[in-house]
Amino acid sequence: MVRTTPATLLGTDLPLVAAPMAGGPTTLDLLAATTDAGAFAFLAGGYQTPDALADQIRHAQHRARPFGVNLFVPSTTPAPDPAALAAYAREITPDAGAHDVDLDAVLASLPATDDDAWAAKIDLLRRDPVPVVSFTFGPPPAADVAALRAAGSVVLVTVTTPQEAAAAAGLGADGLVVQGPRAGGHSGTWDPARTAAEARTAGVVAAVAARTGLPIIAAGGVDGPDAVATLLQAGAQAVAVGTLLLRTDEAGTSRTHRDALADPRYPTTAVTRAFTGRPARALVNGFLTRHDAHAPVAYPQVHHLTRELRRRAAAAGDAERLHLWAGTGYRAAATGPAADVVGSLAARL
Ligand SMILES: Cc1cc2nc3c(=O)[nH]c(=O)nc-3n(C[C@H](O)[C@H](O)[C@H](O)COP(=O)(O)O)c2cc1C
Image 1 (tube, rainbow, N blue to C red):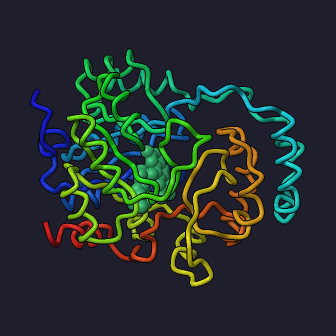
Image 2 (image 1 turned 120 degrees about the vertical axis):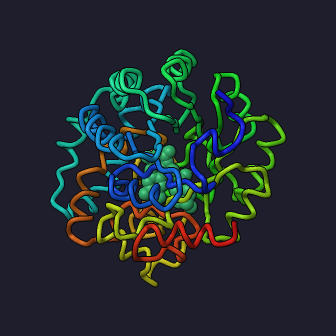
């Protein structure tokens, strides 16, 4: 198989990608709308049960266009100090209390380990291969990369630095998702203790392109067709967008999150570990402001600690206590059909 150009790597005409967005925003309807419009699209395998993911894959396979599946690589960092987690639980107790969440009970029932059902999801993708598999949050084991490639999938690894890119090449990846620090949602950094310095995604792409010859999908901070052109010029073969799709008709984004993205009360974004224990870019709200400085480096433990609180905040329309994932281009996130977003990004190609 030739694996050099975007057309052969992703199988689409447009060098545009609907990024995976776990936790609700990625839906089968969003996948269908963006692929029908000529982009490539990912299902978000993170947080899903293997059965639910298998079901989504079955539905996606009924569509003619190729698609990918994205998985979270489990953390290999040592379990966090229980005292640090307990201290953070005390820190956020007033916020939990606002939604009647008993954090002591949550803390007592935190899963001892959580690898997001890694082995079952890899098994599923080996048995029932999809055109593309992408990984984020760290290096996948080389044996899993080899097994998925042997099954016929193109394997992409998300990287945030030239060093990670070189390591991903060494693992046998077919290509890279190069995510700049302006991206919305979780950073794919392999080191969750590190907070990336502000940088243009094009700069990260150029630095990675200088280090490896692998095809690059660039992601992070895209706010329109000019940003797409800049990233292609910097050396990317395709450009992924997440935030620009969050308010579209087909996305599964909560009403609270959608509204906040257009709310003048939220004039800026920041990278924080406050919601999940892993760096992620979000609109700056009350929860982030109060707790950012105190959050331990502890994913997925902090994710589990705050999850019920965030679920209730979303349901109650409380944007001040919700993880409002957003890249720096969020002001350009439009309502309406996702196909219009793809069309407008393709306008200058
Ligand atoms: C709500 C949301 C959820 C995300 N979930 C995932 C995910 O499950 N897997 C992943 O690799 N990246 C995830 N990301 C990051 C995107 O894949 C992509 O890197 C990012 O959206 C690009 O930056 P942009 O949001 O500025 O377009 C998420 C981003 C957002 C906004």
